Image (cartoon, rainbow, N blue to C red; front, side, top):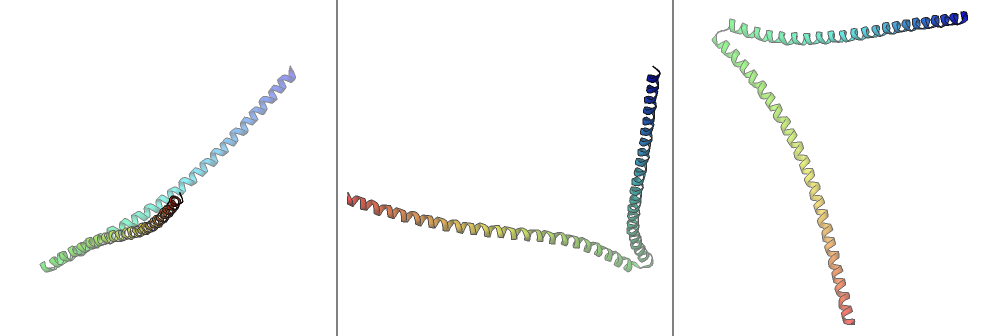
Length: 165
């Protein structure tokens, strides 16, 4: 009985030690997972910060150019006479019209290019169909001639057979 208790106590002690080792191992894995997660979060954070800074710089550049354009217009309006104002507004209207015209022209050029490509493909397809049609017509003529020759041969043989009979 004493040995059994001692053995049972040894088994319990081993089990507790094993459980302790497992707990330590799990704790280490959790710590490693947490470190990896924190590194990944940090790298994502840094990339988002860089992207945000780039976006902010781009927006600032756009706004600066808009402010500069408006400042020039304001200076012309403030300093100029009616003719200068009229000229400035006319120039601005021309610039906007030119931009609209350029964008429309680009769109139409792209459309023309697409239509030319489509036309070329259609012409190639038509050429292929016409070539196939010519080949088919040639085949039909050859078959017709072959059939006519066969009919003539059969007629001659029939006439020979009739004469012989």
